[in-house]
Length: 563
Image (cartoon, rainbow, N blue to C red; front, side):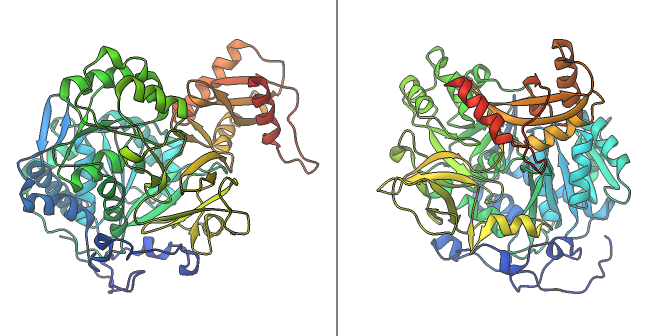
């Protein structure tokens, strides 16, 4: 065991921190810029102790409560129980501490698709006292480098199938991410995977780190309109709070449920819906080796009697037209998030299946859903109301509450909220007077239901993914043929929006071959789903007199084409 030498220190809540690496605490925003947190709005929240480890609560405590022999994770035909997951996560925690020298507060990058082993490593990190930094498998090396350097990653656990970009990213950094091990989807490939090999001879017991409730548990990255991902910091208390609000009070999880879905666990939407929510209530989650398209999802629901589904509106639109081919009688709990759920999609799916989709508004900054409604209270065309534990209102630019039917900025607060890592400017923009401003324009009905109007920034939401236009622009500008470019979201019936790039070339007028070349170039530089599905070559871009791009004019142009 490494010898820990740092002095005791109080965490942000005044309780002594368990962390000897103080990076997270040192890079929290000033307390004056935090949102107002309400920990007394629900009895569960008010009962939280000053010291808690969310990994222990969600896994070890569930085993102690009698769930040890119940299934928790499935991958194709393999099933793990809560007890088996506890044993494996304990062995991973031992490797992190005893072999890789992790000290409490170190940041650990996790990189994999949705697999049981990713969940096991997540719990292993938390129980060892590390801070989880999960990354989506589609990210390329240049994107990983930003995450590694921003969060000052010390350790990484990565699926072997993703080794190429992981190695490339680590080689591009200097003093960070020096400890790296690889694993397989089920942790059963010791011949090729270093972590799979080392954990085999480790004991399956481990005493979880005695973290404070206000020690940082995870750093979640999300894209912003400036092109640089934003890093949000969430405490152990926050992870449990998100489980004790939406799924508990809207009756969205029970011990006999089996969940599946499409969002990556690296997104907080997927982390909650496919890991922490089910485990808080003794349920299980089913993953799959192959990508799950809508038809394959429906086949899986029929075959495995799945009861709960988390996915984006795009998938629900397609499934509505296929539902009559499958037995979906087991399915009762469907959640949509990632983008607004159109009324027509809700009605089509309900007509085809009889299931009311639960729409949810959440954000990485808020950790998970804060506006929604229970299945029996969903109203087509509306997102819902502030869920128990949260408040929400529609305000003007000065923070004044607006009346029913008047569009304005949505503001919210509750037991979770925004804390950006070392980003005071963005913190001041997102949090104002104790309220979180997610960047959405809403209007409210007379009885408190919120209806989505638009995004207040330049984020492109396509098929449930948040895509930063400037990030795509930056990748395109690395190509030698591109002189200038502007990227926007263009309306699209199937995906809500698609990424469209307007490009000024250094020479020539462009052609179909160059379109494909540029698309392939972007796919190789950043996550492939961010590539521009449409490219238009232009001779100039609209700008202000000071030379700033006027993307809104391009958006107006695309909207007018649709009308």
